Length: 421
Length: 140
Image (cartoon, rainbow over all chains, first blue to last red; front, top):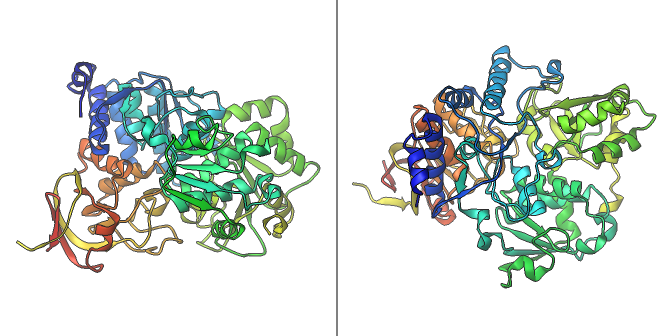
């Protein structure tokens, strides 16, 4: 792999020991991925600030000790603590202390305290064709698909290394040829009624990730509806990046690199065309649940972090109600500050909602303790549905936002299955 | 020298190691799929749920999911719960990055080889003792 003289000098220590380690990691990853060279980046989104064990803390603190600073604007993904409501996160004192050290180290490297997995809804929106290095699988899917900016799925450590080096390996989704769709997903057999419902999009995403793995798909049949929202695309991408390795998808007539199917395909014939059927979708929906329980113990919303529009939908459904079981809504400070300013956060809390900021219920011990499989969490998020059983011990039940709100009144499951027929 | 049972398409991280083969029956996300403290397959929906990867020659048909999988690999190296070697069905820079950083941090490193899904499927039965060296995989 080719390094420019400046890049080689950085790797050899010209900009300090931290920048040297950062450049070595970027260059070594480029070699592993088969990149010909590195590409300058305009921003980074850093997933490495989440505590998974002391190794991640030692790595970040070594970068700080050796004088590391980000060379481009960098936002931070969730940490393992809610710094706004510190009492919410339980867990061993050692883990909480180390999680805080890790978060502080990333701030010391010059990253912004955004603490969200939806940075694209917190003002960090690179433009069409701009090269960046983003971590967090849902954020990468949104960035490539909805914004048309360019990032590979950047792993923890490479994200901060790229931010310090100001470079990323020029490979994968940075290159035109790899952004063309190889698979066409035809949704003509799916009813417009289902496509008009928010509950459709995480299921479509979960099916997509399982069906195509890491391939780029062009989805047809959604562009004429005039109502596929940014939050729908967010939910689709998050689910697809959980069940598969999807870093880019095109929705023909909706996303910026797919004004037409021909454009999404880059003028080449597709390698595969899949006609999506209602039965395939129902199977994907059912795979998002691990239980058919009649009662739930908690509801979790907000993976990716809830937007202000999603809060507005929740407020409409929850108006005048009082929840009988814990309801957690995970979001970032960008939404929380607006909610607090308008008195909406207090109203939600009176209804029985716990607002979680900076983190979420599948990456930090927040839910009431449960022996594995003895309690049930309900969610409208394909991503929460995917990660809840392994990360929390709760069984999981997938439903719409309406189902979640109705079921949270008493804990008795209410699900409207009619739309799936 | 034993006959090679497989040859790597690419050596992602060089090295030598030996251990019993554990070929996972389904793709996995290391984050959420492997407990970094115990090295056990933690996702109850995974067909190998409960299996321990420490010290194995771990063959993974495909990797999926989170970009935090590199952090889980780093932690497995730090705590001594890492596999002895990693055989991937395709190049995966995220999990391999955990090994690269582990080497930078002095936690040790393991060989990582990219094969093809077909070559992963053609490996011997689970439990077979394999040796990995210089891109060759042979019976130990």
